Image (cartoon, rainbow, N blue to C red; front, side):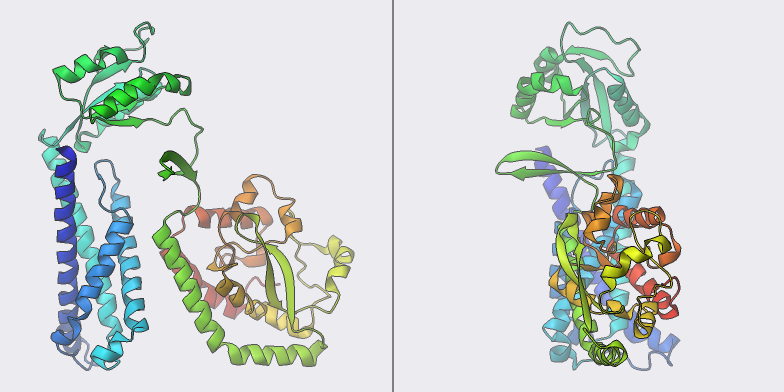
Length: 484
């Protein structure tokens, strides 16, 4: 009954979400077509095509938003979800849906078919912003209404905690302090009848032991049971757990018995075997697919647009020092996978053989090797390095999938061999052309700070952060700041 009601509520919210997206579609058209030309005629001199010409794009928008809303797990219980997560979820849905929608429009050339290549970019931006705001306000309104209803004593779930240790008490305190979550704690159960009595007074009644659960369930409704026990007791809980499952009572296990950390926790299934997954890297498949799609699209465009620059650089290298134009080197990628990285050659031929002669000039601590005025660098190479033009061929590595546009710089195997345990975590995502290190001082930073910035990027990754780094990289590269 509870699951059916939850499905009905989620279906209603889903319908409301799509209604709000449709409203944002029309309102964005009205603002762009009527208000902006009147308020800013020098910037928006013309109104848009009639709304009827734009409406064929609405079903595609609703499909895109539906995919994003469902794929990103928007329709789950929000009882304990923080407000910041609500804001982030609405923003992620908007970014994914808008990106998918615009890619399909321009790939299928619907703008040319329906609007003679006059699809308004400002209207797309307005639509995305309004859709995000509408979804966000709706989530906040539903959140406030739900909490108000729960504070009045409605729509609550009854709860029993198995265990009387410190973890169990802290859980009980959290439920008491957050009444708007809508949980009503009935009491605690000991795992065994002969377990010692709690040394400290419990914040709710002690109802007995696990063996008393059938009687408790028959006397009063129990919606949820949380096991807050030690790992040594888990094997003995199989029968009580199966009994609760047979009765349809939702059961949870507090994971305080596991090592503490900042990992994202997900429940997966492999051939009907439930797996509890811990990861400290981004795990959202739709967002990672979006990142890869943008890598392929942008690297393809940059390679095509930059082809004349590539040819000029190749000619300069040939005229300046002869020899090979491209330099290839083995680097470590995702989780240590080795790949061949390509760069324009900036050093004299045989430069690697002379590295040991320059070890005493290394300006970086740790395993990294950097010499600001490296005598092996040619005059053309010095110019290329200053403006990062030597890294243009790595767009091919991005297109192949060895690298991403944004990510930690790929190290050589000799450096990785000297990493300590915490430093190896920078290999847990694909390496990139640019990252926080690139826009925060480049070679002016010491090695540990370099690694810390890479880990900060991994821990806080989002499509918005990638876009921010890409935009900030442009002035840094053009200025040549921090380059060796």
